[in-house]
Length: 239
Image (cartoon, rainbow, N blue to C red; front, side, top):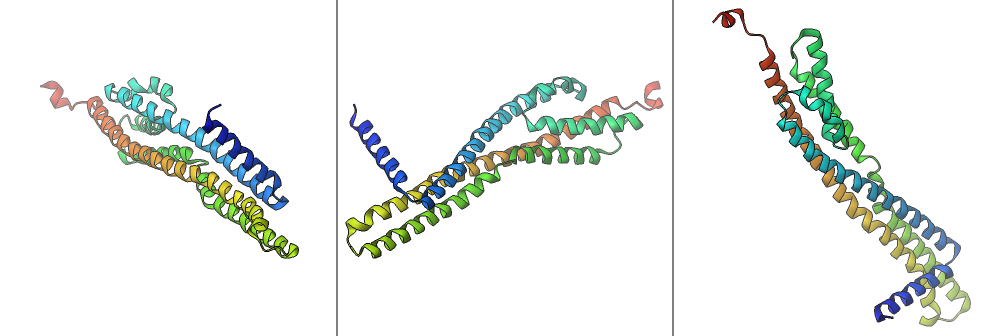
């Protein structure tokens, strides 16, 4: 067996022994940290997959949208790009567009369409951000939970040292090493959560900016379609 594998097994076994030898308070702290870590990794994996799909589908939807000449051309195929937040923005604009066309036959209030897209964009970004704050909570709380377990373990170690009356490094080192396991566990839970939180928030902000840019393109298409479908004056028809 390779030397690195032997070393890994040895270190892993040492850590397992330290965890098994910890007191009930340290075990409770480790259980809480493991729960935080498992939940945060579940959020990381699910949100990263969702953001990646949303980014890919947004690119495809924008390309299809720019090839279309009218809203009616892109509306039937928009559903297949559903993971993209741009689809929600598009559908919000289409609903308001149809409402205005159905009442007056023309778009008389483009600002209402813009507001509808802003509302839809906010809803889509909120959907992407759901559960992401849990990563910030994990990154902020778990180091302190681990530190609590360490402080408690050190107190317990020195209390036992005082009771035994043997003031030697050999007597206090095992208790302190067991206590430091909780600090390491807290950092192991916090570091991935903090990194993933910043990466995900950056990607979601990028999508929010992309929604705003798409809303402007959508307004341009609405204005072009409205002008092309507007009936000409009688004087121009006679010419």
